[in-house]
Image 1 (cartoon, rainbow, N blue to C red):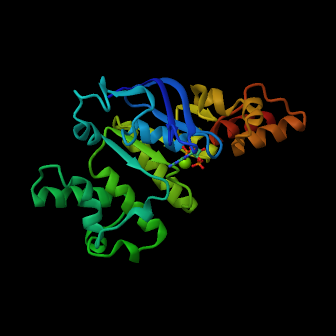
Image 2 (tube, rainbow, N blue to C red):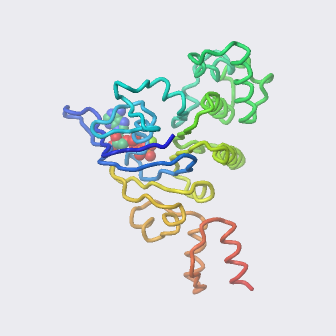
Image 3 (cartoon, protein in one colour):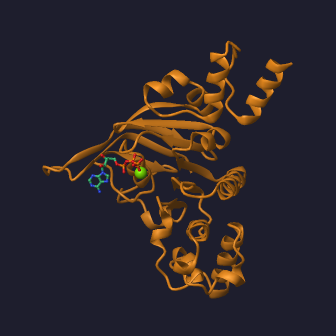
Length: 281
Ligand SMILES: Nc1ncnc2c1ncn2[C@@H]1O[C@H](COP(=O)(O)OP(=O)(O)OP(=O)(O)O)[C@@H](O)[C@H]1O
Ligand SMILES: [Mg+2]
């Protein structure tokens, strides 16, 4: 299910005194099985972009096509297309609204023409995939869970449709380091099985370790679309656009400041260890 954006722009409240141009003439293609990160400063248009890719808002101009089908074209069955795309919104736990965990996770299967035992099995699978015991959690009210457990239930509610494209808005923000790690490994597993993943994150370290391509937005424009290595080891670019840096990048800069000239900047912790090993020996 390749994704193609063509001359895509989006303006909120178009034609009113409050209009805001959130996306400006984006063109890009995402192939099957990619793992992409989206970065950019607050308000640059990241959430708007993923909502449009997921077909939740209509572009003001230009188009999004998924597997050759254009969202909002009369020929496209939008609900069929939507079943293949799972979206996890920013702070997804605030959207849990059913009376039990089981009902909440099953919500997306409402129109899936499954028997109740098939729904139950799929919900069990989704909960256990995110590390929650089905029997223990299924009858609990979502609002009685801890924040991290609520996040897992929200993730299960997206995975339950077994999406071919998984879009995540700041999915690890607010999770403890162990939960972050477990969640990112889960994403790696889905990606290895062919799921396309698009993840917004301010956590450049996580993006360095897990994604292979980065899109950089600034004021609604796509200012860079390149491999994760190219973008996240380009310290001048990251500094110029005030995007922060990875911890590996900071340590590398520190080593360079001590005149330990490192010819090729490492991207990941493992690469940094290899560089340090070489420098120290
Ligand atoms: N519902 C809305 N109505 C009007 N303007 C909006 C609306 N939602 C977002 N905007 C504006 O559109 C621009 C892009 O917002 P968006 O939420 O896509 O940014 P973002 O990159 O996701 O930011 P953050 O990192 O803070 O989540 C911002 O200027 C924002 O104020
Ligand atoms: Mg956002």
